Length: 436
Picture: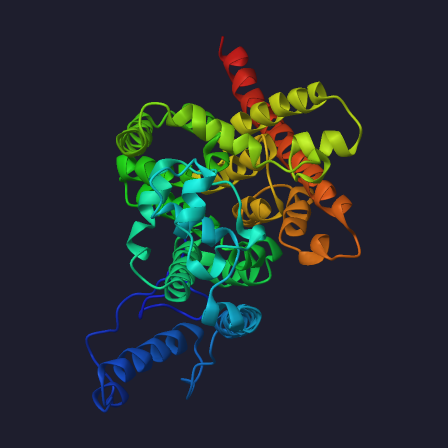
């Protein structure tokens, strides 16, 4: 059933009405403009049908006031988020930070992105002796070329431009992910502690979120190849698209799969062209060397298994369960919910993760909260969006509880969808039995 839209010839209840009669009353002839004409005709039609006196003014719909209030709250929270970023990074915007963006900026000018000496030589002079900034560059070669346009700029200016681009990506995510619930998306993004850490640590996770939103928008406009290409952009962070093949197979979107593979082919071609034929091995070595020394602090299945003192085989079995759950959910859910589950599964299945990587639970929480899932799944999704798990009083245990909640939400959503699928198929089977 299509949603009811409020056109000019619409009653207060939202039901469509007939156009005004041909014989217009004096009130209609004296209308100063077209809007007053339509409003007066609507009031007279409602009065004739209810045999009542035409009202003077039509009361505004209460849901519009509630929506406006929710929008004001979301805007205030977003302004507080921007104010916190500006306050915390006031010194960095003047001198430049020693965070992960320093490795992005250095790799854009390095001759060998996987050589630490080459990265150190390309660093700005003010950070030549900063030991904390000597972090391995664990990204694909295309990532270095992506930010090469920032290299000619001074380091503080380049960092400011980078932050503005990430804010623009978050705006794209807010406007494209859930078009009917943008205020909710804006509020959840503004109170997201992992997203705030992503900005503070110079990460580019908003680019992956914008890629997910672009995939949804392209799918909405019946452009599956473009949707697959947008999804491939999220492969800048490999963890974000680990479970993407399950979505493509479950939805049987072969045109979208073509766009996804085309995007990956372009990324691989540019990477081979800029870094040589041996970059996959060197990237894998840098990727695993950047993992935390203590796996128990990683917010994924491997880290949770180490935190619970379980064998890595337990994480492997849990990973198979997550993959099965994602496939079942993708078979029955919309593209938005499926992409959210793919993002959450990417975090759980990733071989190494950090605190800011839990931003992948943001699209999953919003998608499950906006879907028609069971109320238990919605409550767990609401916990995804809550910042209480990142309070320093809880320590590392809170992030592992969050991982377990994500694991339970995927399994519960898959179980409920499989039960509803069996319930929908049962009456059809009985009907066929009676007809035979």
